[in-house]
Length: 254
Image 1 (cartoon, rainbow, N blue to C red):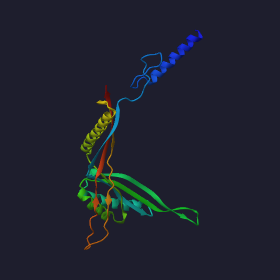
Image 2 (cartoon, one colour):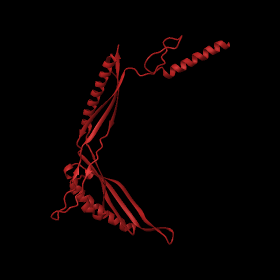
Image 3 (cartoon, rainbow, N blue to C red):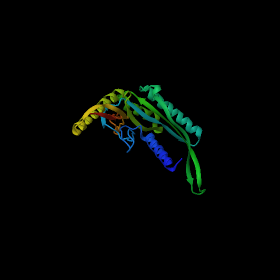
Image 4 (cartoon, one colour):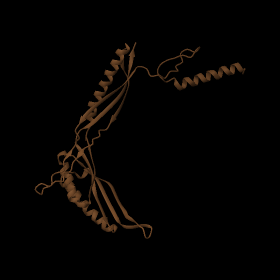
């Protein structure tokens, strides 16, 4: 093969490789001297982002609670922890928490140590048993009552680590937020088309991102005792913000 023919063959192979890499992108372009080869991957149309937000009142409380017992032996710590946890579980169920809504999240038996300066080493002083569960409370009016019952049942061994608010079935709120997001995207696209003096076509691409609601409640514990009757721990669920973001591409009509 002559050198000139070889160089021509290599050039054609390189062009075909470029076409194979970018030929799937929208839009058309040409290489000088070769018509109809698509080498453009630029996005066409009007691309916009729409946002929809809906406020909802939480109807589920997840309470992470349990007990922690420390004794000189594993047997003593485990016995004390088991008795205290049984009392806590009874307090939960007797205050309306279903057994199916109570799930063990963490259980451990660990050594308790201290540093002995004379021996210059860690020495075991006891054993700590920790048993934590997550209880779902579906009656928002009873949250404070359940917290107080758990604290009383567990006594000094009771531990309440965290409280989390959520929505049992957020689907209808997502539907509403999704409609708002699409309407927001449409309004932005119409404005852009008007400013660019083009005619807006139908959507050619739609992508959605959702954000799970997050609530940061305010928990207030009243310490004052009135007439020797401790008040119920007040809990405020606040509101959850449910967000949907959509990215939409609209065609431009000629």
